Length: 600
Image 1 (cartoon, rainbow, N blue to C red):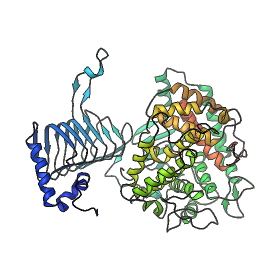
Image 2: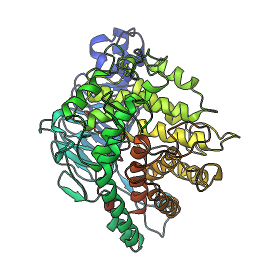
Image 3: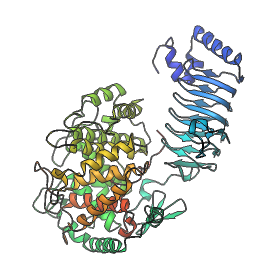
């Protein structure tokens, strides 16, 4: 930190710097702040070298801060709070009710620990319900990431790590690494992380999960991809056995023909993959081949041994920028905020995830994003063409956020300090509360640009980082309205991009809301039946027609096959029958958040 020590806001937001950098005047002001708290109506005890930001709203009945504990800017602290030593309540965090923290607890910005609740009896309005409090207890040496919510009655054991955006509704034992909504224990913190080489397409152990054709087993929990039987029971619907059998037959045929469809795109003369016969080899085609082989064969594409697939893909990255050019092109130059337009932007996604499936990773950080400052990023976000080219703008966000993700996975910083937080802050404050989207409809294409842009944007940001999307009910409304537009969804006009960009938001928002869920399932069921009929024996799926003639079009190829295989899974999962497919996307279109080394 190079800010002058006379900037009081520095210590309000970074209180750990106060002891070493504060001036005499600032120390006197903090002493007065603490005297006011000690002289207030509550029972307040403050240990040695504590700090309470002037801008924090601290109105306790009981407040006991252990030595070297801090309450940062704009935190909201009320009721009965007791902490051990070396605890930090970071900016904009809410701690209310009865909350007890052990030693060395770090609570990330914008998190909420709510050690109280309201009754919900039907005979009283909510505002007249009694308040109850069982309290929250957090052990020693606990790291709670940003935007986490911990509800009343929860105990978090010693040495836990809680990922960003988690909603903790149940107790977590000591040494848990947990994430998700609701939060689930993913592993024991004491266990050594699996090396990248331990993830195998042909093996069983995959990044802490055991992958089988009938589902995924995670940390001792056995389930199908989405528990469709239980989902059907909750909805009171009969399981559609005819559709299940159709999906099983489709998946069996696709697996049987997988090697043939990969063979038709392999170019022995160049030793590379092309999307389909008669086209030039591309980087994306190689990545699509890896994804298809993983989905249908549970192995690598058979034309090269796994180490050679890894070596070829890793060699594509420019060590200076971390970007990946197309075959035969010069190394791309960074854009104004890191990621340039064009193929290199998508290569950040497809090459990164192909390497991940192969049990490897980029050899270098994506330096072009690693050096992006929050200011440069925010300026560029404001300059993107949201009004008339929201897909382009959303795709840029997808690429930038994915590069930041790979940088974190490599054990470094995502970007310059504060840039990743600035991204999510900008997205939250610029989402339209009426549509849940970024951008606007256009006269020529209706909602196409904003819906397609929403998919790309949320795939790389909210979905990839495991965070809830803003205004999920409004997103569902907008997407379902768009799905009725005959310009894009009349029979014979659907393409992979447009169907994916509807079903993914519906699937993602269903994690947060049941709003119009029956309509979403009905749409997914009709699209699923149509999609299965598009398979070309031995060739796979065609991408489908596009209004402007872009994309791979009506001939079956790797891009269309990779995308439609993921779409079929998402459609089937919304209907509740995805387990019949026996595969689950693990690459670009993986349904779960991508694994992270640590909370944001």
